[in-house]
Amino acid sequence: MTSKRFGVLLCAEDSEYVKKLYGGYFGVFVEMLAEEGETWDLYRVAAGEFPNEEEVGSCDGFVITGSCNDAHGNDAWICKLLNLLKNLDSMKKKILGICFGHQILGRALGGKTGRSHNGWDIGIRTVNFSSSSTLASSFLNLPSQLSIIECHRDEVRELPSKAEVIAWSDKTGIEMFRYGDHIMGIQGHPEYSKDILLNIVDRLLQRDFIVNDFAEEVRAKVDLHEPDTEAWKRVCIGFLKGCIVMKD
Image (cartoon, rainbow, N blue to C red; front, top):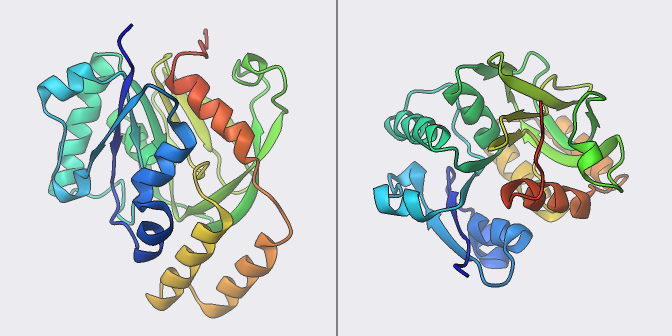
């Protein structure tokens, strides 16, 4: 039996902190998603490294990471990524998009992305699954709500008519969506741990993306809640590896 092969489309530069503790964001995703016997390949798409035609054909699925870039931007690598995603969609390849990955998928499918009208969302937030979605019923023990780490100021504003909103929060209207049985986007970060989030908060503060009072508020609230890491892991693995079939 041929082992499964997956590709991580890395859309961000690794921080020194994540490289030192986790082997980069690729290591973070592999730790969450990889199982015995699988092959995982890294493509640094933000640096211009894309899978070739043969690699695309041999992969069972792809994961798109977060990024400091805007999914509504037109950098050369972003435009190339959009073309790749349209091709993967036509091939019905499994694609899981996280944060920026969620947003760029929405754009590639014909939706609209942009700055959130509610500003930055950083911390641990409760996500509500749509009562009409079949995702929650795909897992016997999955509740109607889950907590997830968030770190974004952009969002998917509109989706094409064929896409289904799976989950929402009081901050973001489209926290999750699916398109057919082969594409799913998650606005939050199921792969993040609290220490990764707090390191990002420090970096955002140093770069004047956020102010000190906001950073202190985030740090204080992070200690009060826990993300539902294991449940999100089950959701991501179940979708990416074909354990969930969500019928219309």
